[in-house]
Image (tube, rainbow, N blue to C red):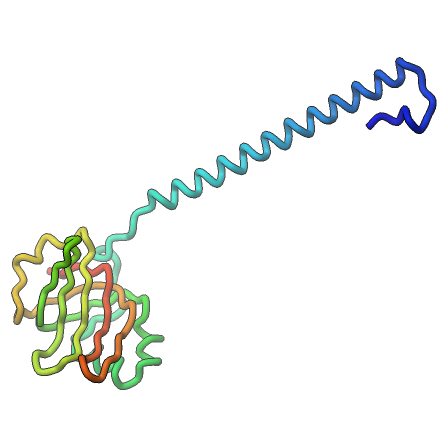
Length: 171
């Protein structure tokens, strides 16, 4: 705001000061506008790069552990806390006997590994990129599956389950 209210000044000085104020105000508006556009462009770029990001293929990631299905079930059932610390969010290879194979309405496949005499099992949810060989697998076959351990469901009546997600069938 011009200082004409506080000081006496002639018309020329007042016009100069008013013009200087308008130029400064335009610069501030332009800088603010450019800053907002740059911030919006950065947010859009980050959002689009995250949206287009692909998961790493589990078959290409080296496994941290290679276990038998009975070993991992026993590990969780005997000491759940230490098993969580050791196996949770780790890529592992589990070998076992196929108890059953489920395919839901959406096409997602789950292979259940374990001993037929036990209610406990390892539930392996296959990655959608690795469902091609599912037709060749029959219950009772010995297979090895690679996946990420995501948890353990303890149940006394129905049997406990170790859960593996984003699984791939190993050759």
